[in-house]
Length: 271
Image (cartoon, rainbow, N blue to C red; front, side):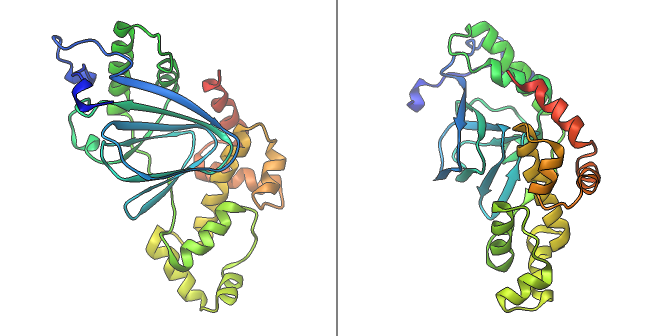
């Protein structure tokens, strides 16, 4: 799509009533279904992007930041920002692209940002996958979507992934196998460093201790399993918990709801 083909379009409360209605070329959404780990190498594009992992989890790298995102997050990536995305599990990625001059006003829209996606915003994204959606309805949907996201809370519960080095090495192993039971001392002995070195590396890169970070990583891994229909008891074992009650307590502490309640909410945005 050439830059010359882009046309101005109404956005949220910043609508100009004399602008053309939004077409599929102005704002389009797609859904990609994957059955394995799927990397999208470092790239950039002139369009702005909204990305929502409807099922499963993904890792996003922008600059020195690495984020681990799940279905309650929708990420905004402004145009021409270099980013690298990896879908870590089988699942469904819903992604939408907007023309370069199609951006709401405000500081939060000038840099990558993680929003909370609610049921209405999620269903608007799903609705706009339809290429035959009329321009007037698409205009209204886009306007409402940006209105919702403009007032949506920023999500700070993304899992910060260590960049590289000792903490990054350990984190990659735990993301690949959240049931990995190696302790801080086990990792230090295996890597030939002190436990203080490992602990400092995690705090420096993530702001959390090793134990806090591993618990959060396990909770994030459990979201994909629960969304895929795995039972709570099986999920508990798969992410390294000896008892289901221990897993439920940790899940509630992290997300404020039980695993069963999360599964019920997740089903609201299923077709």
